[in-house]
Length: 111
Image (tube, rainbow, N blue to C red):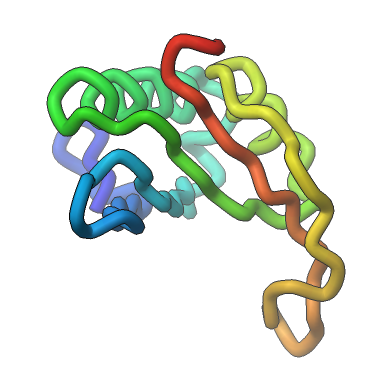
């Protein structure tokens, strides 16, 4: 859950993908309350999440697969060091149809 000033505004999940080493994490997040969009909250969330995973958990790579239509989210991720690696066509079922997503990766020391 993402809390902002005591109010639940979204969700973030972090999953170690390399169970033995813990160096690769998958993540997913969203701010579901439109009143909290375009206020820098997502950027701050990403900055703190990257810091936590790399500095506290030893992550070398962080991967996510946001939907390709979500330009606002893509800008936030790129601003925080994530790179588009591959377009995943019809990757995620959402609201009655398959949606394209981007595989995006953050590599520690390369941002």
